[in-house]
Length: 128
Image 1 (cartoon, rainbow, N blue to C red):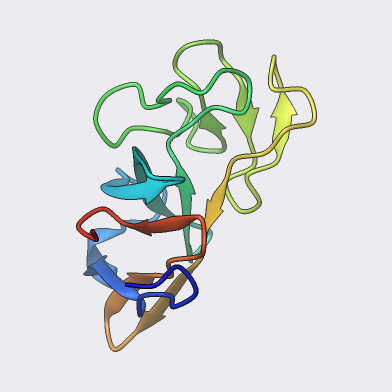
Image 2 (cartoon, rainbow, N blue to C red):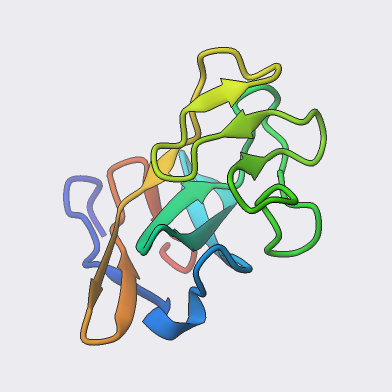
């Protein structure tokens, strides 16, 4: 596929798979020609997705597979250094991430399905 042509939205999961403040759905993407994990979760009724990369140090953040929220289920928290992020914006709220933010992946929901939207920099992992 030419670099200027974006792939269509990619089905991620059923809407019901994203329980409110529950376990995230992880998926693979290609960012700048490198494989990267990403995750989607539901927070305050909204499905959101980010690359699984802390703004402080580019390492995966989940405590266990799909577990990104703190104990009170209020914030996304990096398991490595304790950086804390707003689940709806990805903005760093406290910790070593300073004023950074998580890399957002756009999602839409329709007809009971969640789709993520590839960009020029973030594409489906199965593409050539």
